[in-house]
Length: 182
Image (cartoon, rainbow, N blue to C red):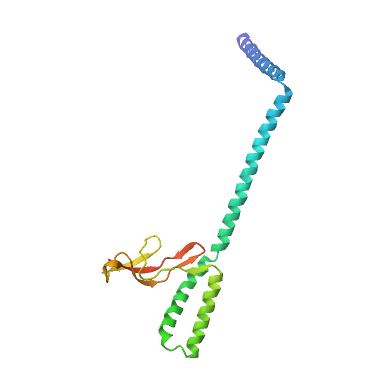
């Protein structure tokens, strides 16, 4: 090492010492602050941190609980959607056999249909309440076609329900398919 390099190292060491001295002076100034006040400030900071963490955890518990309940309500949605065509077939069969209500076969089909519907209703499946004469709402109905309205008061209203709609809990799993008057 040359003398010039050693001189720079010494100068750098002096700078380091002066920085260390500055930090020790700052520490001594901090020590002059009342230690009780410093502890109270730390305690207040930790209390605030604890309260925020506690509130965040409570929100997490509430949110996951709500998600869990929602999941249980709609967990069977795929099964319900796949059973809707079966319910439609039962409706068509019962409509066709409605002429012969005294036949034991028709009564058997009605019993099976009612049992299936009650079981699905217990699981949260409900028929959407849509009938002819209701006002068409694009948020709740699916328009298949428009036909000329039979009367002036039926314009913009549902003329016929082609396929029933269903809800599972509060969620619509199939919108009713309707014909509206134009």
